[in-house]
Image 1 (cartoon, rainbow, N blue to C red):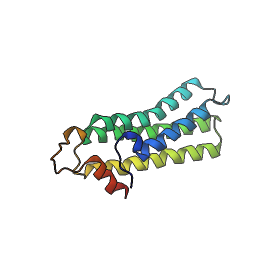
Image 2: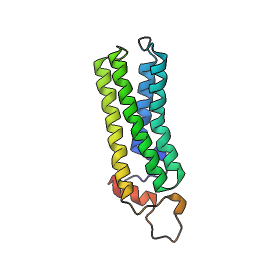
Image 3: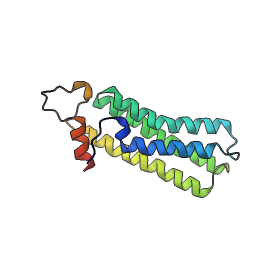
Length: 146
């Protein structure tokens, strides 16, 4: 099983990155004419991957969990904005269902990661010492992903 050494290894970040590309694709169409909604949904989508990355890089479990909650909240924000985009006729019902399902899936992955981190002995990279008995980030993620 692959170990997590950087935020780019996290499945929730990878899925979030895919969502960013799709949201930008759909919001670049002529039909998506509402600049305010377009700007807000793009910003909320970027917030998902940005907060996962920032939390990971902070180096403590508490901060990582905090930023994961923000990323999870951004998933909800994107989903709410997808409803508005659908209601206003900017995206089709099939695109709405597909994108909404992806936000729910990312949110669920983030939630499972949060719950795993809460009960982990892993304190964070900031506290890691060479002789420490604390499990490493890679060891923790290897157990969770297997």
